[in-house]
Length: 97
Image (cartoon, rainbow, N blue to C red; front, side, top):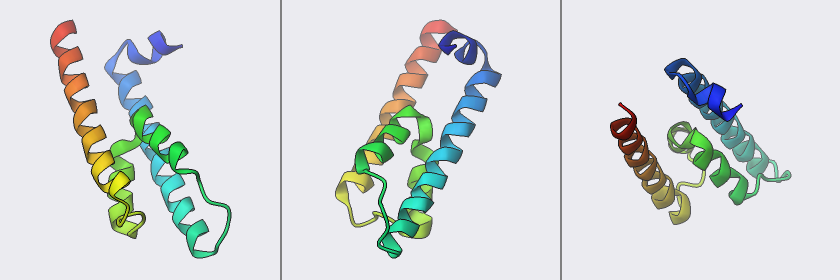
């Protein structure tokens, strides 16, 4: 399955689109739960979504809805993770093209 998704640009774009949509929805859900004192999404799950490709939308969504913007773990961690992901993608592109 991994090879099928990542074997062409369409698969990569589709995967990243879905992951970013999920990351944004989960971030908004966690904000709603925080406001209503409901069951929260564990931070490790938020970071897992980011690692799996949802970093851009999670970072933007957190700023838009002002969620976890006081948490250094997220406000430093997500940009650093995004930078690392961009470096990895750039290196992989250079190696395979």
